[in-house]
Amino acid sequence: MRLFEAELGDKPYFGGESFGHVDVALGAFYSWFYTYETFGNFSIEAECPKLVAWAKRCMEKESVFKSLPDEEKIYEFVIQLRKRFGIE
Image (spheres, rainbow, N blue to C red):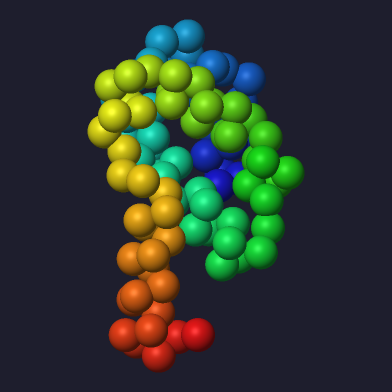
């Protein structure tokens, strides 16, 4: 995540001023942030504030917001996988 944040720099989007293909591709990871934070016991916003600000900008776009899975469902999915593979 720090690598992504470094690449983003001070730009609003990865391609610069406009929302583009890289933002679309990486935007899907936003739904996983809650799961990463919960299992990793850390705050993405504290570690990578520019990345979180970028993700929030992306989520303001209806096309992004409506296309992403619910973060709670992802979390539950990961819990099921961890149980299935004996990782607890």
